[in-house]
Structures are given as structure tokens and as C-alpha cells.
Image (cartoon, rainbow, N blue to C red; front, side, top):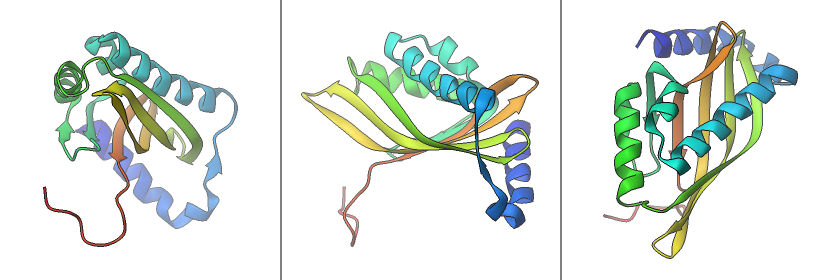
Length: 157
């Protein structure tokens, strides 16, 4: 909870200076992109502990299916369950398109994701990561994923 609160606090501090955000470059951008790639790799090989280590202890994740997972343990368990059932055999790939620094040690990364090889098709959507730096290590503080829907009323489930 503390890491997520710190990330939100840092984000709140940067709101007045939002016009001053800058694209991440150099070592930070490379490290952030590497964390996202390591997450994809851990998912694809079913290594839930390695996946969990990429997250802050109190991270949270809102999935494209609308599930909300709070805390590293819940994220590990939820991803393992989903990848072992609905997305069994799926291959996860994220393409980060933009990384911006929101403040010292706080970054946002936006991109597209695809889970291929599921039920004869794929799930595609958009994703946003908030990452925080502790020492020299970037960790995922939050993920928000969505699958776009047409404009208008949301169809009933």
C-alpha cells in the first residue's frame, strides 16, 4: 500500500507540472521497457514468482476483463489462474509505445498488448503501466488494461 500511495502522491505532485513531463530516455527508458518485457517473459513461461518480483509489494492491476487485483500476491495468483484457464497456452506480448517521466522516480508507460493463441484467436487491447524506482530498481506500481469497445452504450453481459 505504501508504494502505491507514494506513486499516487508523486503523481499528484506532478499534476501542476503536467506540461513539463518529459519522455524517458537513456538508462531509465531501457530499464522500464526491460521490466515490461520481463513481465511478458515470466507470464509466457509460467513463472509467477519471477512475475511477482517485478511488482511493488502493494501494486495493483486492473485487467482488461475488469478484475481488480490488489497486492503482489493477488496479482501472482490472478495471473496464474487466468493463464492456466481462460488463456491457457496463450502468448503475451506488450509493445510499449511511449514512456514518460512524471517526476523523479515515477514513470508512465503506454502501449498495446496481445494475448495470442487463445481459443483459436487473440485478445488485443491497450495498457498503461505506472512504475516507481526504488534505489536502482524499477517496479510496477499499477497496470490498467482495456479492450476498446464501440462508442455508445456498453452491451450487457
